[in-house]
Length: 167
Image (cartoon, rainbow, N blue to C red; front, side):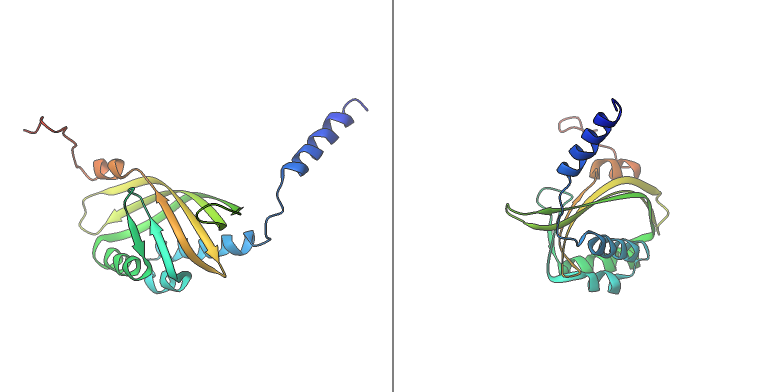
C-alpha cells in the first residue's frame, strides 16, 4: 500500500500536466517528415507542395526572412549547383499548440543532426539544426531555423580574424 500511493500520485501528476492539444500532432509530424524527406532527396517540387502560398521562413540569422517563391528558388539552386547530398541523422520531433502571441498555431519542433556534402569537393559540414514548423491544413506556413553558421563556415575552411588583426 505504501508503494501504491506514490505511484498513483506520480501518474495523476503526469496526467494533470499533459495537454490535450488539438489532435493534429500526428498529421503535423507527417507533414514535417515528408518535408524533411523532400529536402534530403533534393526534391524541390515536393518541398514546394508542402509550403503554403503565404509561407514565411526566418533564420538562421536574425534578419533572414524568405517567402515561398524565394525559398523554392534558393533550394532549387542549392540542389542543382551546390549540394551533393543532405543526410539527416538523428531527429527528434515535438509538437505543441501555441494558443496566443504574435504567431499562434500548431507547431512541430524538429531537432536534427545534418550532414551536407558539396559538389565542389570542399568538404562536408556536420550541423545540429533546429527548425520550428507551423503547420496549418497540411501545409507549412512558417519556419524558424537555427544552426551555428560560424561552425558551418569553420568546417568549410573559413578563418575568423578579429577586426584590426587582419594580416
